[in-house]
Image 1 (tube, rainbow, N blue to C red):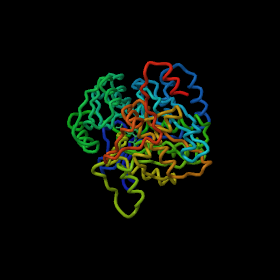
Image 2: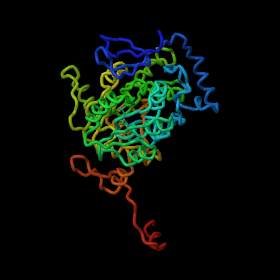
Image 3: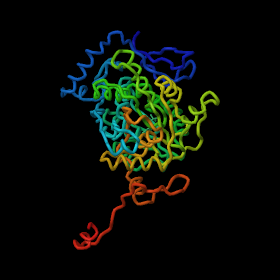
Image 4: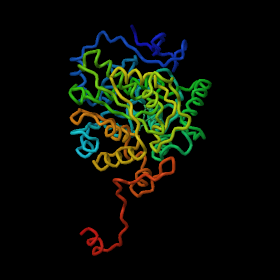
Length: 430
Ligand code: F0G
């Protein structure tokens, strides 16, 4: 078997050429996934090769995505790759955060250390490489902010024109600023993420523009590298849990696929359990999985959360996410605005910091009451500076939830206005 695109639906499984510009199965409408001939994979040899590549000065080897390219070999020519040295994100520990989450230890895989400050870079370098290989000139996405920042950077770095569609007034300024600075043509649409995705799908089809949302299977292939790198950094010791926030559910789909492949190819000896955490006001997947078997999947018409990155009511990849949660014996949880805000402050006070959506992980861990000695990796998806407005409001007691209620600054740390007077400041510090 050569590389191909395969329909994800078990009843269909139709296969298509890897170079077809399709995002859903032309036969049944199902999601697509990339598949490869993996018969030549030698896990122990590749583990050594990947370690050796970390010493290299070659751009492709320095990328924390392309270093692992043998597990997503969809390109025939690596000159299509645009790398900003994505990936290479650290594993960080925090006693304070562990205690808050009811654990003895916790590890954060901090994707906010990426070039544009979020995990989207891992997938975007792959999606943009495929766009270039296909000879595309323009690429587009709808975004709650991080995808657009990442696509803008990678497309511009690769000589493509980025077109971005965002919900007007509903993404953080940090992310909007990145899109503008990286040179994307930016459209602010008076609609929510889910509605704009439908719009962008019409426009990309009509105008022959390449779509780089996570429905694009090559984005998912790139994001597999997050768990591959995580296992490499842990010397292939599998944690009990990997916890991540869920919005459009592309990332959990990528993690699950990557982990299943690592397992079946002999890189790891078991699967970790996956936990997806959603914001209570934007939790269609949580509700579906909670009532599983009783009701079909139902989109939420009016998702609401201050964690705008995950303000999504109709997640495209829910069928893939369901498979990964079930295969890994995982769970889905939802957390309130207050829980997200407090967990975020705890991660911040640990000296680590993250954006609001990322903090859903620690809030979820606390709520799930995991075994105290469990080996848990929480994925911080975005950088602390993505949404400084939220931070200032929280610490000064001005942060208001979408229903108008004030978020209590449980761990508030407001700035103190002082006179230019050593005596008075000394008295304050006494
Ligand atoms: N965390 C952050 C910081 C995000 O930006 C996103 C998604 C998620 C978590 C959820 O990941 O969608 O794969 O389940 N942001 C997208 C965007 C939707 O447009 O930037 P997911």
